[in-house]
Each structure stands twice: as C-alpha cells, then as structure tokens.
Length: 358
Image 1 (tube, rainbow, N blue to C red):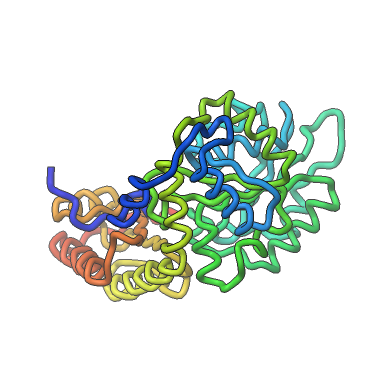
Image 2: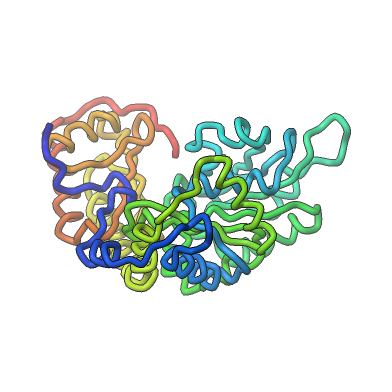
C-alpha cells in the first residue's frame, strides 16, 4: 500500500501536534465520573462559556453528542426536522430510530441550509394519526452542503418558527468553530437560540478524540445519565481533555489557514478541463468537485490519486470531497491539485458520465 503523504480525506485525519501531546502528558487527572478530574472540569467550563450555556459534558464523539441530544428532546414516535444532507440522517447508523425511536423528516435546503419557510411547511399539524414534530436539528457548518456556514439571520428565523410551534432546537456544531472564524460571529451568538449544542474537538481543532455537549444545567444533568447508559462515562479522562483545552487555546484562529487552503485548492482544480467546482462556494475547509465530464468516476480518480500518496474521498459516482486541516499545508494542496490534473490528463478523453449531486 502506498504511504499517504497528503491526506485530504477529512479533517478527522489530523494528528495531535507535539505541543498538544505534551499538554496531554502533563494533564492533571482524576475520576471524571465523580467530577474529580480537573482537566475535564476545566474543558467543560471553557466550552460552556464559549457557547453561552449553563453547563457542558465531555463525550467521546460528536455522534454521541447528537444521539444524547435526540434522547433528551424526543420520545418514541416523535419526529426530527433537519436537512436531507445532515450527519444525523446519513452518518449515524440510524441512531435516532434505534435509540430514541424517533423519526426524521428531511427538508431540501440549499447547500445544507433550509429556510424558515421550509421548516414552517415541514412542521406537522397536530393529529392523532401523525408523528409529533418535536425537534429541529441544524448542522453548522453543513458538511455535505460543502462546508456552508448557516447565516446568523437564517438561524434566528428558523428558531422563531420552531419556538412558535413549541419545538426544541439542537445544533450539531461539528464544525461550529470553522463557522465562527469564517463569519466573525461568535460561537455563543450562533448557539444562543439552541437548547443543546456541541463542538467537535477531533476535526479541525486537531484532537485525537472527543466532543463537548452544552445546554442548561438540567439538560446536561440528564445527559450524564444517558452518557452512563451508552457507555460514554470515563475515568481519568483528563489525558484527552487536556488536548481539547490546548486546542481551544491555540487551534481556533488558525482554522482560517485551512479555509484559505481549501479555496486555493478549489481555484487550482477549477482550471482543469472536465472538473466542475465553484471556488466562490468554498466558505470553510471543504471542497466538493465533480468529475463527470472527465469520463472518470470519483472512485477511479480517488484510487489513482491514492497510488500517488494523495487521499481524497469519493462521495458519489462522480463527486469527490477534499477537506483541509492542520496537517495540510499550502504546498500540499498545490501538489494535490497538480496530481488531479495529471491523473485526468493521463486518462485521456472519455465519454461524460451522468452527473450526481452531493
């Protein structure tokens, strides 16, 4: 197998920096379940303050954050309204149905962002025959939407509809801090209307593991019980919490570098014949590009790039996704773009493949 030299598969591919590893090695630890781990306590306090919430809980993954939030807000038979591209629909193994017995009603937003009008249309009228609309979930940024930042005004409009109908609000904040850096809107401002919200530590922030879910003291108290039930309770977790503290203190503002590198990559591949990409659509660290016109499938291009030590994932038959992060430099994205050019040129002219969407 060819060694991966440039990994644009996902921002989950980051590895802790030497400085982060040193912080982990020096972490103060204690029994997290008893509230005695000072590093965990500091991380959750920092995150609660960052998000403008009363309390927070440290969890092993963002998926667990989403699933616990669903369990907090929904009862069996309740319905979640969210965009069709959202992680909670497509990448959590049907957890909402399996764990909470909740249904999902998807909305067809634009690049992962649905409107207040679409939400209004999606909320069900109360009826003994219909599921109860209960929870509105928003993913900031929208991953499958292309790293799209939900505008603050749109979030306010969506929240107003939800409140008018008595619905709970949850923000999947996997890349929330990318949104804050790209927009200059604070995390607390984005999170303000939401009952629950979380931030991922293991994507652009570069931690090896972990996410933090925040909300009211009552909600987080209940979340702790679900954390126990789902096997998410830990012991001397300060070793990994210290990575999160380091990341929040040192790795947030540098996300702007990832955004600039993603835009640069998009601009470079936009000049390749047969590659369809709009650099103006690249708001954060994610670039989707379509290669239907080259005659190559996404899987073929991905495989050939892998042979050159460059990892870019195929998202559909003709669509690929490249994600920048702290382990990817400007020279890396330039080399990756030229590799895409070379592979497509080497393949030569082929019949166009029917295009597919994100």
